[in-house]
Image (cartoon, rainbow, N blue to C red; front, side, top):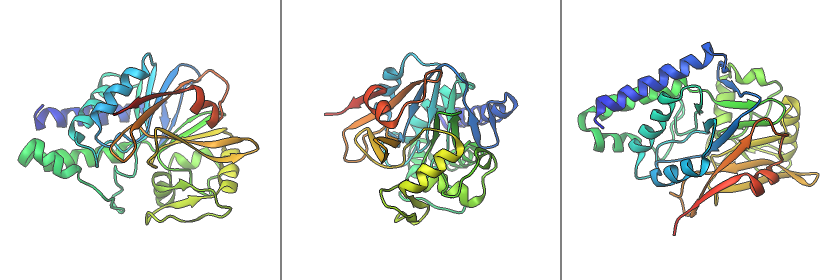
Length: 283
């Protein structure tokens, strides 16, 4: 694939995202998922093409794919991962949904490491800058959250600590956008600034309150390296949060994807981790 073909894929994916609103699949930055169908949810991919291909096979059959962001940076095959995922979006625009992660960086908030531009330059030479510019335009068009009403909130980091209504995610403020992409859950009793330098560490009481106020049972998110999946925020015998990661570029050896039936009753994070996760392990 040359730079021109890559840019054509980026443009096709961006056009498909613009259609999401016209087709009433989303309002602003919030996707509202259908009430039925099989959904496979991918966490951070981070340029890990091998894990992506393996997990796409594990996810079959599916009606919809949902990616929670962080497509590039860190891994060895970043342009290839982007090309694969953008082709999926272009071929099945209403069945493949791409959320923004913190590595699809905000114009006012730089991320580190950010080696995607260098890999694009290695792959496309002098056209690498143009490919990167088009990707940055694509990031601006991406939604930031998806909801299965009454069941699951799905996003990259964690919900804003003062979120009261789902509609606030449709046209998020600058602060809410940052928190959705950068927040993490932690087991403390108070919210504190994140050591990442952006976002907030969201306490258990806050997470319980926010999920209750928007009427969902479980948060499905990524953003935090782990061995495939990780549970957080145990309340009354069940966990509120499931973290899923779909790469092995950190020091972990397991990547995962979560498979849901949207018509089924809402599952706890514990039930999802036990019965609804497919894994790929290296070594």
